Amino acid sequence: MKKIYVMIVVGIMCLSMFGVLTLNVGAQSGVDWWTEFHHDSARSGSSTSTAPVTNNTAWSYTTYDSVYSSPAVYNGLVYVGSDDGDLYVLNSTGGVAWSFYPGINVESSPAVDNGMVFVGCYNYVVYAMNAANGNPVWNFTTGGPVQSSPAIDSGMVFVTSGDGNLYALNESTGAMIWSFKTGGGESSPAVSGGVVYVGSENDNVYAVSETTGTEIWNFTTGSYVESSPAVANGMVFIGSDDGNVYGLNASTGALVWQYMTARSVYSSPAVTNGIVYVGSEDDNVYALNAATGAKVWSYPTGAAVYSSPAVAGGVVFVGSMDNKVYGLNASTGAVVMSYETSSSVESSPAVVNGLVYVGSDDDNVYAFGAASTTTSKSSSVPNIVIYAVIAVVIIIIIAVIAFLYMRSRPNRKKTSK
Image 1 (tube, one colour):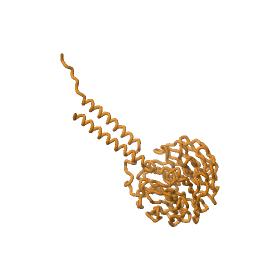
Image 2 (spheres, rainbow, N blue to C red):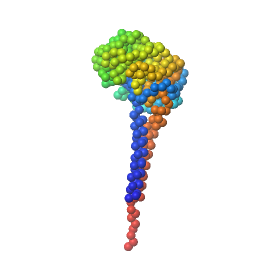
Image 3 (cartoon, rainbow, N blue to C red):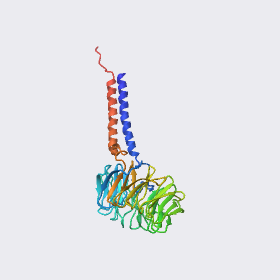
Image 4 (tube, rainbow, N blue to C red):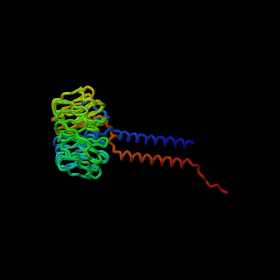
């Protein structure tokens, strides 16, 4: 009987170890990673992550030129381009995990999916690399500079080029699936509900079938559309050089509302909890009612706001040409935190696990927040390591139970006759 109790106790202990490890995996997979420009393929600009309320610098990394690219953050790594011609991949302390050198400006914001990282460059090329080590997977050459940031959906990579085309590429091979002629520009595609939305320098916003590249509708603004669309709750939100922020019906392209700022709107809107957040060249950050376009609040920075807001934990994070990164109360617009870099901030923030990541024209990539307080060591352990440990624990459980079972069996000795 005692041996049976021992077997039960050991089994429970081993299963408890298994449970802890499984919870660690759950915590890892449950992180709201910021995998693309403006968080996701719909460009919501919103995260469920906690957000810092301090301007404490967890770390910074100095490149050799301005950082216009906006960071993507996945599995403990920060992916960001620089005008020095490098794509940098930084670890949780700001050290370089690996880098890729196409030798020309990398202003496109990387996208990470399915173990690969995708980014466009000024040399007309879209690259796909192994996200863990930078090994090349494929590249696709367009006819112009690629400042647009890729969107990933349904096994396809969507990106625009200075050659005036919107491309759909096979995520695994880089083969072109279709292309659609726009007027070119820097607007990055958004994907939602089987439709690709994008702005263009011919003043239009387009909606295109994700699978065929066929135009569904277009809407004409009063000037260039460099802003990237955000899609939420059946609407498309986008800015234009004509100074307006537009709210369009996502199915038909019909105008629902427009809000006029004092100057061009290059910033891309973020949408969460029924509010649209966007910057303007008139120096302001705006919060607008997503259903009506009515102004909820505005906050005046010291210069133009080209950066696109990121929202997390009730705080709106955005850069300004006044050299500062701001954290604003999402409900009131009151300043929660600010940090002054040494030059203008056109890069758009990413928020993950209580840290805000952003680039600056002062050549640096910054991480704001309390270092190590919200990102544990276990969260940076690769999944494959955790799975391997779990497999070993399972083997130990089986071996221990089998051993104890064999020990508990009665000895069968031969009897003499």
